[in-house]
Every structure is written in C-alpha cells, then in structure tokens.
Image (cartoon, rainbow, N blue to C red; front, side, top):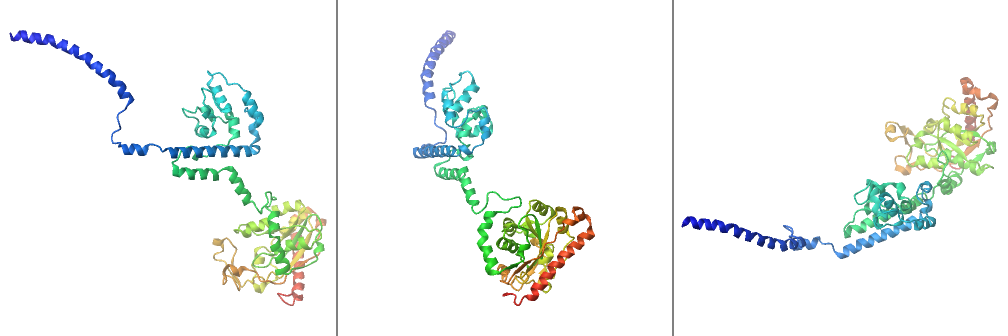
Length: 472
C-alpha cells in the first residue's frame, strides 16, 4: 500500500512542475518593462542629495546667456579685424573672404550623403547638413578638435586648417577657457578673462605702451619721438642750468662725414648730450651728432636705454665705421673711462688716447677730424676718490665718492650748475695720407698726439681765461 502511494506521488510531481512554469513566465513578463522604465534608486543617495545634484534653471540660463555674449563679441572682433588677417590664407584652397565668399557658399549645393569627407567639409562651410549638424560649423566647438586631432563626435578632418577655410578665417580660435562650462560664480570671472585676453585689448595695450615712442627706429636705436619728448629738459640743461657757450661751431662741415674728437670729463658723462645739443642748436645745418659711449653705460639699467634712444651708440670700430659710411657726424672720446674717472686734482689733464683707433678709422674712411674742448664738466661732480672693490658686482668701473655722494644718496648725483664752454677747433684733413696709412703705427701715433695736443691747448687757454667756475 505504501509503494502504491509513492508511485502516485511521483507521477503527480511532473504535472505540478509543468503547471508551475507557465505561471512563473506570466509573472516575469509584465515585470520586465516596469523594471526598464523605473530603475532602482542608487544606494546611499538620499532625496536631498539628488535634489542638490540637479542643475538649477537659473544657472543654466546664465551660462547660455554668457555663451551667446561671447559668440557676439568674437563675431564682432572677426569682422573688425578681418582686413588685418594673413593674406596667405586667401591663396589656399578655401573660398575668398567677405561678401563674395558668402555668395559663393550660398550657391554651393551640399554633396552626396555617402561621401563623409565632402559632407564634413560642406558642414563647416555652409553651417551643417542633416548628416553633419550645424554645431560642427561653430568654431568654439571645433576648438578641442583642432588642437587634439579629433574626437568621436568631431572627426579628425575638422582639425585640418586648410579644410576649415572660411570658418577659420572669419572667426578667431577661442581660448581654452571657453571649452569647459564652469559653475555660476566662476563663469563671471571666466568671461572677464576671455574679454581681457582677446587680441583687440592686447593691441590696444600695445598702442598705449608705444605712446611717446617711435614705431620705427634706426639701426642703433635712435628714437626721434623720445628725443622730442625730452627736448624741453635738454634745452633747460643747455641754456639755463649749464649756460653753455659755444665757439668755432662753423668748423663743423654742413654736410658729409666728420669725426668730432673731444675730451671726456665729469663723473656723470653729460658731455655727449651737451655736445649734441650744441651742434643742433648753434650749427647752421642743425646736424645730429651720434656719440660713442662706454660699454658700462650701454648696459646700465634705464640710463643705457635712455642714452641709446637719444643718439648714443656703443663704442667700437664697426659701429663708428657704419655711421661714417652713412655720412653721419660722429663724436668720440678717446680717453674713455679714464677720462670720467680722473680725480679732481687731475682735472683738465688729458689722459692717454689709447692706441689711435680713431686715427685709423679716419684714415680708412677719409674722414676729417674736428678737435673739441669741453670745459666746465669737471666741476659738476668733483671726484674726490673712487672705490673699486665692488665695481664688478655692481657692473660699473668704480663707485664715485664726491662731496655729495653717497652722503646724500641718489640726490648726491645731481650735477652742480657750473658754467660750460664748448670750443671747436680747426679741422684736420687726413686725406693726403691715404687709406693704406692706417697700417703705419708710427704715423698713427703722431697724428693721435697732434689731435691730443690741440685739445689740451684749447683747454689750457679756456681754463686760464675763466674767472669763476659758476659764472665764467
């Protein structure tokens, strides 16, 4: 009896299992769509956190307004500066810029949809097709593709500058700050940076920086606009402060090359500036004098650039020869640093004139020499003694010690208002010796000593006739 019950139970089990399976599939069928439509909430995410992560409509609207403003500003800048763009782009395969390019693009029909290269090219030039949306023609969205070589959404063909053609020339490439969408508080600063970093403002600041300067200077840095700006100060120093008297200026030729050889004096080398002012004011031809200055003045901060823009040139044979080849009036000080480094007890005693480099220069270029004596500069800053221990560290040949410096600090470098006299001697013509005489060391030495003697004689006579250092 027990065996019959077990057999009947085993036979009934498959029927109950078969009846159970369809019921299970019927329940799983309608439950699947419900699961796809409504995903299970993330673990650990509370309703408050989900509400914070949701973007605010006001922030999104503000970002869109800022993007629209940037688009308008970039478009205006491109229309305003299109005439200054590189003309080489017009020779490329892209269409011409301006109204003709707009008309030509409007007449162009979109290419076949099966050609991806042509579709991408047309989308950039015409603003988009059904397969290439208009957003690819936006240069702000093309910025990342152009720099990185392409993304899955922006193919590599958009990184080709020749294929960009009209779109690239019409609107400049944006800054990297426009690629990311910042939050509401940071977007204001990003917009300000974007506006302040455009080429328009850079050019405007560049024009402000060049105010009072020439856009073009000569080969040696002479700036006529800068000199005109300082002309009132130079006139005050020449006529009122030092009260310069000039004699013999008629010996300077009205045209052609000429070399002015003068004594160097004064702790501050103001004799070159005053010599230039004397010739420009007193000479009938109002000629410009280019004087050669020492290396330490050329490299001195602020002073070197100011002297260079006023007409000073670094002293070497090459610069002097280039100036004389242009028939310039050049002034040299053969004493060099030894001239401005004389102690007060050695005033108006000319130092050695080097190895006669200026004589060799005049012989090679057939240039006449006019000796010049400058009196009054020795007393502007009387040099009591000089400190040479810190000279190399400061980039100067010596540290001067005068009655006012360094006792009064920088104010002690102000020169005293002494009376100046500049005398031009008779010219010395070296043409009969010929250019080959520049190799004769003995002749060069004799001619150099002849010029030195002429300048020393003019100084001795001027100092002997002077009654007062400040009143002449």
